[in-house]
Amino acid sequence: ALILRYLEKLADGKQIGAAICVATPTKKSTSKYPPIQNFFEDDFNWPKIKLATNKWFIIGSDNDPYIPFKEIKFTPEKLSQKLIVKPNQGHFNLEFSPKFKQFPFLLEIFDQLE
Picture 1: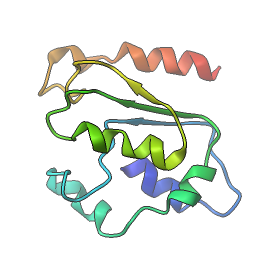
Picture 2 (picture 1 turned 90 degrees about the horizontal axis):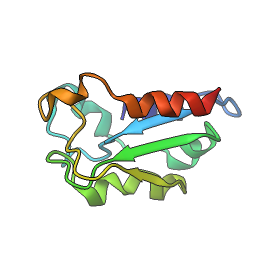
Picture 3 (picture 1 turned 135 degrees about the vertical axis):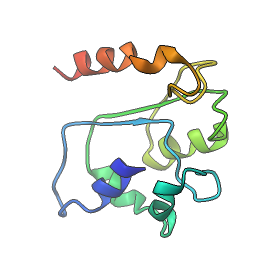
Picture 4 (picture 1 turned 120 degrees about the vertical axis):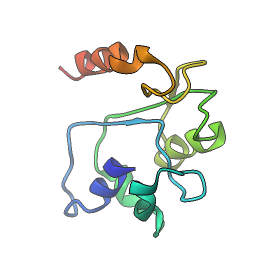
C-alpha cells in the first residue's frame, strides 16, 4: 500500500523504473494492521498510479490468511497487469513461515531489471 500511495503523489509525467507489490492490501476492511489503516482513508488514484511505471511485478498467494485472494487480484486488475501467483505461500512474512526471512523470488525479479 505504501508504494501505491507514493506513486500517486509523483509529479505528473514522472516515472520510476519498476514497482514490486507483494500481497498488497487496498481496502481498510481487509487490512487489520493498525499502523497502515490511514493508507485506506481515501481511494487510490489508480489512473495516476498506472502511469508511474512501465514495469510492474504484482505478487500474491492464493491462500493468504490476511488478504483475501479476490483483493490480491484487485491491484493487477486496476493496473491492467499480470498477477504473479505463488501458490500456498500464505502472507510472505515470518509469522507465516520462517522461510520468508529471505525471499529468493525477489532476487529473480531484480535480475530481470538489469
